Image (cartoon, rainbow, N blue to C red):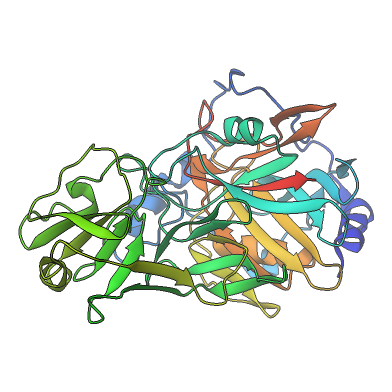
Amino acid sequence: MSLRAAVAALAVSGLVATGLPAATSAGSPGEDRSRERSAGAQWQTRVAAFGDSGHTRHSSDRQRGPIAPYVSPQDRTPLLRTTPVQQPMGPGVTYTRWGQSDARGPIQAHLLAVDLDTPGVRLDVVNPGRVAAVEDVLTMARTHGVLAAVNGDFYDIGRTGAPLGVSASPRSGLMNARETGWNQGFYLTRKGRPQFGEVTFTGRIRERPGARVTNVNSHFVLPGGIGVYTPRWGRSPGYAVTQGQQRDIRMVEIRDGRVVANRGKLRPGREIRGIVLVGRGPGAVELRKLGRGPAHVSWWLRGRPQLVITGSKLLIDDGQVMVVDDAEMHPRTAVGIDRDTNEVLMLAVDGRSEESRGYTMVELARMMQDLGADEALNLDGGGSTTMVGRRSGTLRVLNDPSDSVLRNVANALVVRRD
C-alpha cells in the first residue's frame, strides 16, 4: 500500500475517535510539559518481573519501558483513529500526524514522507560538528538550515556522546564506523538508491598488513583491534575508548603520512593534527612495530555509499516483520522505504505519557508495514525521539518528546532542499 493510500485509509477506515486525546500541536523546546506522565505506572510490577536477562536496548538511556498488557485475540477492541492532519512542507515532503487507540491504550504518531524522485529533495546526516559531541535535533536542524529532521543513531550517552554505529554524509563523507557489532543501517548507494542492511567497514595500514583496523571515530575500539581517530572526532581520546583498559594498549600519531609519536599511554584532550591510532592487545602489538617513518592508513565502506545511518534492528526486510519483542513500550523513531512510490518514511511515535503509551518493536514494525514500508530500521528511541520541521517558515518541534526538555543526541537524519 502506498503512503497516500495509507493516509487516506487512516482518514476513512475504522471509527473517528471520540474522547481520545487530540493530536498534539508543535511546541517550543522550553514549553512546560509538567503534566503527570503516569501511563506506565500501572505496569511497574510487570517491569519488575521482566528481569535483566534478555533485555534489549530500546533507547540510549536504557530506561525500562512499561510492559504492554496482554490482549487476547478474542478480546481485541476496534482500532480508533483521529482524523489525520496533513501538511505539505513543499514539493516532495509531507508531514502527517494522527492519534489512535486500541486495547493497550492511545498513541500519537508523526510521519514525514520524502519523495526522493522530487527534484531538489535530498537526505543527509548531520552531527553537532564533531563525532564526540551531542546536541538537540532542533539546534542541529537550524544550524544546517534543513527542512525537516528526526533523531538518528543510538549513542554513547553520558560518556563520549559518539554514535554507536556508522554514519556518512553526502556532503561530509564518512564520519564514524566500526567493523562489526552495530552495522544494521539505512543507506543510499553510490547511485543514490535507498537500501537497508548491514554496512561493511574495512581499514588498512599499508606498512602493517597484518594489523586489524576495526574502527574510525568510534566510542570504543573493538578488543584486539585498532581504532582511527581524526579531527572529526574532536580532541584525542582518553581511556573511555579502550573501555578503561590501560595495559597492552598503544597510541600512534601520524601527520602527513609519517609516524611522529608512538607511546604506550594515551594522551587525551590534545588537538588531533593528522590522525591518531589506538590499539588494544594484538592491535597494540602491531602498532608498536610502527617506527618513525611512513605510515599510510586507509578506510572505506563497501560499495562507497553516499549516506549511512545505523540503528539497532531491521524492523522489516522485504516486507516481512523481523522483530519479535512485543513487550516493552517506548517512544520510537523509525525510517523506512515504500518501494512502490520511492518515498522515505520517517516515523516518530510519542510515549511515556498518558496521551501516548509508546510502541513495542512489533507494533512499530506493523505500523511501518501499514504505511507501505517494504524495509524499515529502528533508530534511537525513548527520550531521544524527536521530529522537527518547518511550519509557517519556522523550524519547530512537531512531536512531543518524552523528556521535559529536548534531549541532546549524537546525530540526525535530515531533509534538505537544494
